[in-house]
Length: 350
Image (cartoon, rainbow, N blue to C red; front, top):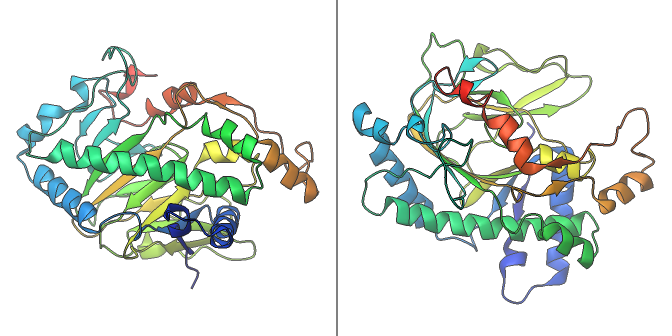
């Protein structure tokens, strides 16, 4: 049975880096991004396991509150993006998702809730909730830069090229979701979160601290000449692609990572975002952090990626690979987020 690779980021967080070990980590990341678009990142040398456990406890405390208390920080109070979204308010592929969540974004200067994404974050009135999550956010932002550096080595970027790329992500317009999943009802014709490869996961690098529920996160691996193994009788949602769904079950001391469309553009399709979905039959909590480019970042194919593609005989102008058009990340994000919520908020960004 196929399984996602486990990659240890320790060589890049150690005080005295072993360049040979760093190279091995970078090579493993490069292979994982090409083959899977997903991987487990071992961060046991970077965090204390008690930290995500405390975040989970706080999430559980919030989602157990009466509905009227949770609604005090609802999306509609701000910019329809920051705050609490009720059960089935999030929409994927036209179907309501069976989860509730708190969505947080990078704070902005001169917030204005009448502008898309430009409101203020809303926090539950629970002791130490914001403090603990703020600490986790800072750690994940730093982890994003560490992982980016490791990936730049895997792509064969020069030091100068890496510094240019770093300048596009050093003020990440990050996104944080605190998600509560009730058990998926037997008569529910959708998913806990439907199949997607970008929104609602936004679109760059995600770090998912997963709950213990097995068979919840499912990843679609493209494989020609195979038939889709449809799990639990649910629709495959794979279109005409050939491949298989595999479970990305939690691994101790690891976060699940996946890449999004921004990496597809930066690598001109060498790295591909991967279709995935959540079919949650427990009652637990997931805490994904999305390390995004700067809001003003110009995302265009990287010279290092184009060199690799050229060396493989895959020129951007070949019939099977078109050059990806550059995008400004903030414009891309604004175009994506507005389609993600049910009637009542959706129309604000259409």
